[in-house]
Each structure stands twice: as structure tokens, then as C-alpha cells.
Image (cartoon, rainbow, N blue to C red; front, side):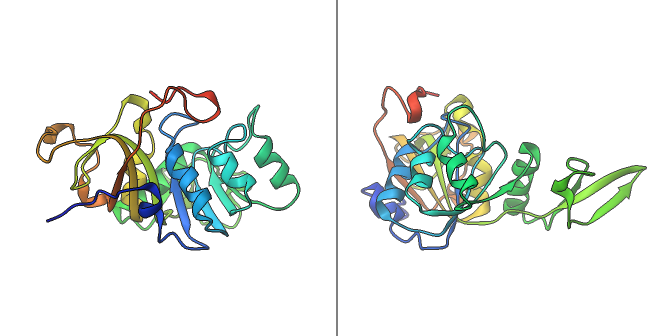
Length: 233
């Protein structure tokens, strides 16, 4: 019998190893798997490479993971904002490596990994420092930059509902990077607010098929999420 449910966050994250590349879903607070991030902090894995849209807000969630000294490098599109003081301090002190990727490129590089594509050409970034050292090519009179896929050892994502086979649904904008990250990682771990009976989710409503999910863990719904963001998002 296939049963991907785990009894606790700690159990779901138990084999994340030092030096792992970990994708973390979310767009700011929307869709950020806060409980899984807290679990990763408690787990203690270090020297991590984190792939995320941004670099944390305030002192909780992803920012707390950075502050705890567990991250060696972050790959993201939006590292600096009004409350990104943790990232700012670590980066300026030379304690954190940054790979800055335009948001569209970031999404497509993750998607390419999940789709088994060896890379793609994009005009975004051509003629800037982001293109240094990368192959460029003229296509139909326009210059393009070659971008490689981003693979991960683990993906931590937040879903609304899942069944024991790992089929997932999401809530509105909380969907963001979750589906493509689940496809791009060797092991995808999803937190869900509701565990559905097998067969009760309409197949037309499944966004991430269980084929791409190895573990799910149920977490309670809270009124607010990291840095005061509404967790309902």
C-alpha cells in the first residue's frame, strides 16, 4: 500500500544532509512552508544551497534559517527588500554566497530541470553581468543567453490538500513555485493543511500528481504566517 504520509515534520525531513540543495516554495509569505523551514532549522543540516524566490523577511522562516548559519549559498530573484536585514548582514559580511537570477529565468530553470530539458536560450540578462561566462547566441537577429536547469536534492513546498499517494492541490497564489519545484527535486516534501481520503480529490483538480511527491505531512492552519503574512494566502 502506497502511503506517503509522515507522522511529523521531523520524520519527513530526517534525511536532509549537509551540503544539500534545497528548493523552498513561496512568494514572500504566500505559499511559504513555514513549518518545514522551522523543522529544517531544528534538524540542523548545514552548508545548504537554498533555491527560493527571495531571501527571507524579518527574522522568521527563511530569514531564521539564514540567521542560524545553515546556508552557504542562496539562488533567488529578489534578495533585498525593506525587511531583508538578515540576508543583507550575512551577504555584506561575506558569509553568504548569492546567485541572482531574474524571476522568469528562475522559474524556467526550475521547470527545465523537472521537464528533463538540458537548458534554454533567453534574451533576459544579455549584455549584463548576469550573462558573464555564459554562452550567447543570435537567433533571428536577437541576442540570447543560455541558461542551465536548476536541480535540487530536496524541495519543501506548501499545499492546501493532499492524499496518501501525494496528490496535491493548492490555495490560490500559494501555488506559485510549488508545482515546478516538486518536479525538479529528487525528494519532494509537502506540508498540507488537509489530508483527503484517497480518490476524493477530483483528478481535474490535482495540480501536482503524487508521482512528483515523496512525503507529505499535515500541519495546522494558523492565523498568521512568517513575518505577519496571512497564512491563508
